[in-house]
Amino acid sequence: MDFSPNPDHELIIEAVDAVCAQFDDTYWSERDEKHEFPWAFYDAMAAGGWVGIAIPEQYGGGGQGITEGALVLNRVAASGAAMNGSTALHLTMFGLNPVVKFGNDRLKETFLPRAAAGDLHVAFGVTEPDAGTDTSRIITRATEDGMGGWIINGRKIWTSKALESEVCLLLARTDGEPGEFNGLTLFLVDLDPEYCDIAAIPKVGRNAVASCEVAYDDLPVEAWRLVGERGRGFHHILHGLNPERILLAGMACGIGEVALRRATAYANERKVFDRLIGANQAVAHPLAKAHMELNAAMTIMMRAAWAYDNGHDCGELANTAKYLAAEASFFAADQAMQTHGGLGYATEYHVERYWREARLQRLAPVSQEMTLNFIAQNIMGMPRSY
Image (cartoon, rainbow, N blue to C red; front, side, top):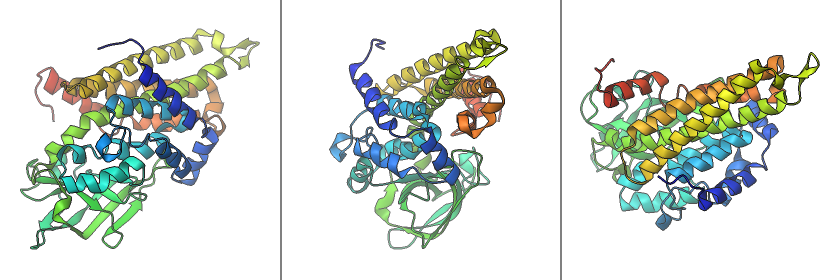
């Protein structure tokens, strides 16, 4: 792996930073407070070609890898947009990866060009109320309609961006019983309001991008909307999980970066007892530690992205990057709150928003505990603990 400066990456960072500079912290605070999707920001990023950066060139995308996608999301988060900005993009940017890898030509030709142009919003429907992390327990059912198509019934939760999305990459059971991974099939379905009831889930943060509960009631799905092979849907989405962890690690490092930047600036200007608070080791040392931890997490993230883009096994690296970035991000945001003292709890200084969104990194898309389980069992050869 080459650690020398990459001119192409430097250009990406410069260009994305320039777009994001048009949308300050006040913009993001207002979107979060009003629960409004950041349409102006999304449109500006789509116009620059950043939404389609990881979609193949033959479908109008940038043809870049997960490394470049992670860099884009990192800069978005680091601008102050945090997760509200980065998750507005990433489901379209890389959520269609199973379609790229396993979809039929009609699926690719119909949806990928629109996604690359930023014209198609995509949601991802996997998690269910009674299944949670245990995907084998999915009970949303797709049954054959007798004419070559399917009828889907069930309920999903934490379907981000469902209110804005036209389609959803949906995992449903076509065969077998709950508790089995075989028998789950992937579909790209329309979120048709005649058959889909969508409701936002009230939550503590990242409110510009809603997380939704979606009830599917006899949703008709044409045969060509099946992605890959029947019964192999879980195995297909596994190809998107490592990239997702890498992208989330990039976001997390960005949130930590902007929180640390605000904390450092405040520590260099705030005086208490006739001295700058940054002169106190109790303030300076935790911020220095946060800086080092963020750099370490970013390095592992880039290594994981390089491994994925070059066709190497990256499961350990991707999970490690997600874990370390989530911890580093929350530590940086928490120390930013502490550095600001009581004012850190005020919305005026924005660090409370970073803190709320950094906390989510330790829960989604997989908990820190399940990440440790993966490393212990699959990398270290320890007995399964769950």
